Image (cartoon, rainbow, N blue to C red; front, side):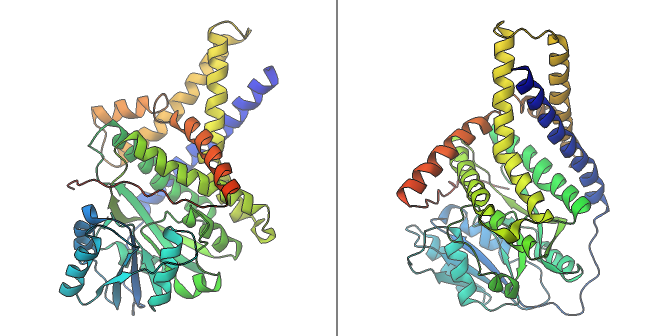
Length: 408
């Protein structure tokens, strides 16, 4: 038991200290990131928006898409995947109003339902040299696409570039506030830190630009990957391509407002990352440093972190009720407190840099370890159970994130 306790704490501290380094480096990287000089010529660009029953958000999304600034040829495709609501009607309205917006009905196929299949069809009916993916609830800033293209064209061996995702409904309740802080820290600051340290970026699934010919040569999207962005990230890295990062290319999206919706979304992400882990051991060309860094990062967030939290909780409870006699109990509590403090400071740094250091956000960051972070234990168990069930049944189920009507 003592060896288990020491091992758990050592791994936890290694991860925590590495994330601390990423936070510090990411803050500097984000601060120095500037808009690059305009290009002499801008390649043709397609915007792909996978959509399924998105009538609640589609009007606001397409209003934002129509305002995208881009000096070259840009075509916007709403990929309507068998929607049963008014998604098609709204898309048709904008298509009639704007010549560069197109409503595309995605036909049925033998591939599993989900985002990958829809994006593959979108690539088959468009022909831009580059394409950019946005989720159906996204409202990108007008300069988001042009910034991604400029950093891609100015980065050696770049397959594309990614921006950051901001939370549209962060003030709705405590859950959305937690998610917003998580995204500021792990998706924005630490993404910038990893790019500065390792020159690697991770595709976030939205607000990401890619070169069509490279993705086509790789065989496009894996229709069986629930985390299609992470899977494609590792495939690109295995071929030596770079994914550039521009933290100031921003899109706004709504996050789950209920625990039920969050559990469905994050379980899908977890299952997708477990799929990548199993696929990793079959793909010999994935055993390269950038791929290993990516995989370790994904596993840390979705698997290892949950397992460490569970181990820490069990040890703490057993020790609290006297089932385990820790001769160094005071030291254990001290180091546990340091770990909690380090984790919280990372969150607060991201909030502070974003100029959102309010009393509610400070309280939220202070509570996240005891509340929001603990959800990852349940996610780990639920994801493993559902993945084994899907594997036994030979199915891949895409659980769509629920949308609600909100104002920016």
